Amino acid sequence: MDLQALTALVEEKIKQRFSDSLLATEVLYDMPVYYVRRETIADILEYLYHDSELRFQFLTTLCGLHYPDQKGNELGVMYQMHSLVNNYRIRLKTFAPIEDPKIPTVTTVFSSANWQERETFDFYGVIFTGHPDLRRILNMDEMNYHPLRKEYPLEDGSRDDKNDTMFGR
Image (spheres, rainbow, N blue to C red):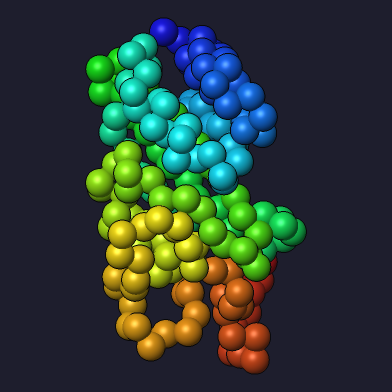
């Protein structure tokens, strides 16, 4: 199946089962990307897992996203799925406001999501509701911030020993 046909097939199946949950679809870097409502992400992934035609049964990636300028949808989670039987790959993204960073857990569908969700919580502060053991996994428990959020300047603005024109800036 070619990329365009796969994109349309998955889009149609999601729309049939979860009519208003699909917000947008696009193809980035030769991979279909589906933007879905956070409330239904676990149900959609479970549906794609059990669908006899698609069989997206391998969660290759689950990671956090932070877009500070995207008001109301600053924090997100990206799920990359692979159908080993069909050799299809897709990506789903869902977003939440930074004031309410709750997204349902997908550990009920993929046990491997346990560690990945803990890592995303640790580094981005996404709270996975229903997670069996949501706590920091790599950083110290005493940390009161999430280090991969884009809330800190990349460079020290007080430095005067750098000539940015040497770096094409």
